[in-house]
Length: 324
Image (tube, rainbow, N blue to C red; front, top):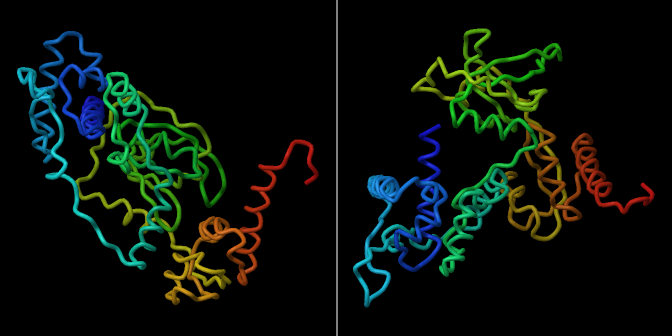
């Protein structure tokens, strides 16, 4: 837990230094970074800040020292040398942009965590106006439909053993599992937890959509270290079978569906494409998001899944008392 807290503190420090183009004095940094504000004394803060400065520099963050006021330079101030750290301009082709669009489906929202947001509020209170453009993508969040994702991700990060009810795929029966989580990975369009099953005394793979209860931490310490050569995706592939690949026939309007055209290997202006897929629910999510710009020609179960999503959206936005 201490390592996670230190990482969060370092991240907040970087965000504070990047959120403005002005020099920040130690007093401003102390008030902007939540963990510094909690320091019991000035000496404790000084020791913590000195360690963090050195660690950031060891990590390659170009933290520089200067003066916040040209007339009064006796008080040191700090900032990140943007020119030494920022990437040069990047040119991407339309095909590369489509691939980035597919990758962006995983990261549904790029935003700051709660502590970082509080740091920005404190900077504004000190009269320092944040440069919001430099914060894009600092901490992306993964959104999934499985309620178990968030708590299991946190437990994996903290190496905290957990317990939960799990529904087996072969029988549908539910049993309690106690697991030391090692990694969370996506494979075949689904999310999986890879960890050490304490009841079976062996590594196991768990599908997150089969976790049938809330996640509780057992309070015990981890007993099985994460293997140095752990390949979570390979472990999932070895214990689960890949869905059979199929082909969907889609009619597209205008420029909509560039990612689908790319997957189909079709021209950028193709009006009908044949898209390979394995998981009908995953493809239905993508197709439904295009609205009236797409029509499913085949297979029927994909068309039904897309229509079901549209009907769910209509129902969710229907006025109270409106006819269904």
